[in-house]
Length: 327
Image (cartoon, rainbow, N blue to C red; front, side, top):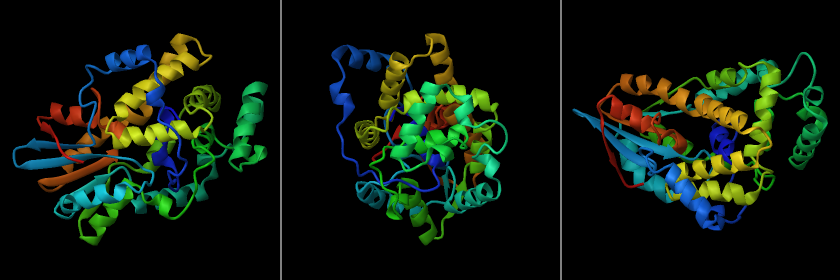
């Protein structure tokens, strides 16, 4: 599914169930591509691991990388983390279930957050070839073309980023974040949002619509055609605690396959990373620092952990000592 699948799953109003099967595309990489990817992330800090402990004085912050989709393997992982959650002073996640519900209510009251309510639809804003591709992919997911044409580019991109084989079920909402939040609530542990989820949507809507359409061109390339193999690769990378490798693979494939000029492709990729990863990480660290207590658990999408602007490195810059832990 490429990078945007992992990045945008957190914005979905309900979860998805990883029930597509598929093959791990990492196993099909050529030796040259594998060497190129490995070299590209060689110097990236904290490039592996879904559980790290940040220590400063008497304060211990457990940072967990999560996957927002459900998978049966999460049951055992959650059991292993149970005592950590129940013994915490606070659990901080991207957005609590209550805050996500409030976001959905606000979206229901304000259709312009996710729909084009004025001016030309996407049919008139996209080229004929691109629109035909979008309409075909929308139909495969049960979205009529007329409805897709009225969706804001970011919202349509989310809808198209998931393979049609995925099922929307109540159990599908039970990703790692929700499992940990449920544990905290059962134990009376304070659970807080790191951000208002509406701010992410507002950021996605900040650019003019025509600019969003330009960015959507890249998004469609990054998310492929909803292939089950892409989704399977992303999920397996998570459970192998190697999501940064997966992101590097996605970046390499995007830049190799896009029809955009190299400079523009590079710029679009960087814009996506800045908007959905780096900027949010920097905003979260002060919230983590301000949380009351010495035993804090932070659980966020796994792609927010690694890199120079990852949550882990930003905490290290605040004077924390980082140590990898079992997951």
